[in-house]
Length: 136
Length: 136
Image 1 (cartoon, each protein chain N blue to C red):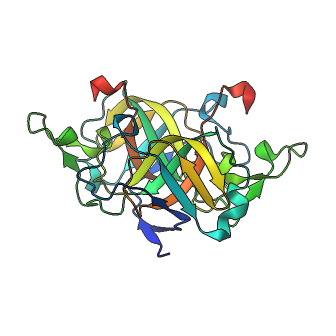
Image 2 (cartoon, chains in turn yellow, cyan):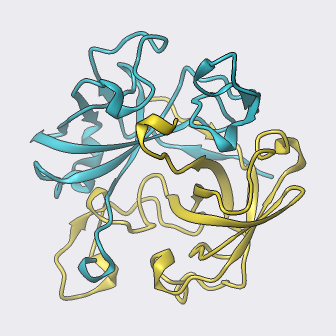
Image 3 (cartoon, rainbow over the protein chains, first blue to last red):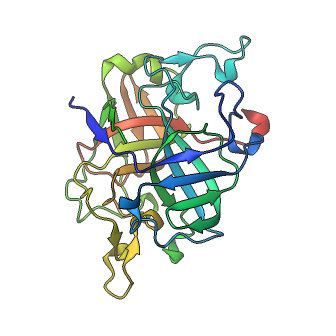
């Protein structure tokens, strides 16, 4: 099957630097961070406002893409588990999925609460969290 | 910024063929579908079971990646909106995000309920829906 190429639209700016020390999920103590977008995408992010609940898709660039089974949460007591049944960053396509709230927007810089991705992580996409079907 | 390359791990097999006729969201009448994985990823999907709630990430290969603003739901009455505030498939990285339930698993074929992606859509990743933090 042919491969497809992603465009990096921005980067995470965060005090988190060490993947081993980073929280595993945003609700496990992740700090606020900036999403810094390339100016070419200003029109795409022009309607983001403080308070918006969004999904941020990132490329977990330090992950091992050859891993197909892991012990969840690196717990040696757990059995080896297929990565499609885990949230391990190590997987064929290490796309990170982060539900966050926008705190501030300053040009092409977007401040968000709790993000567990390390500094420099590429940003791929931003999507709104969908409300009930009547509000779309 | 350098670009990164995705690996296609499988394809959608669905009666949906025409993107214009496909539902916009899974809860708007999408039919069940098969996810057909390349045999190289058997270990990654080995722990998927019927009843599992999963997120399927796809590559919306018919999307227009140059679009930065759209009228939501193609409604001419709505103002042009940055794509990062919409679920438009047309966006710099057209990654589809689908929350579905596994109905059956047959080797490298996984049957899921309501998927709004058309037949042949590349599959990138599968992640479990996260339960409360105590159950991880």
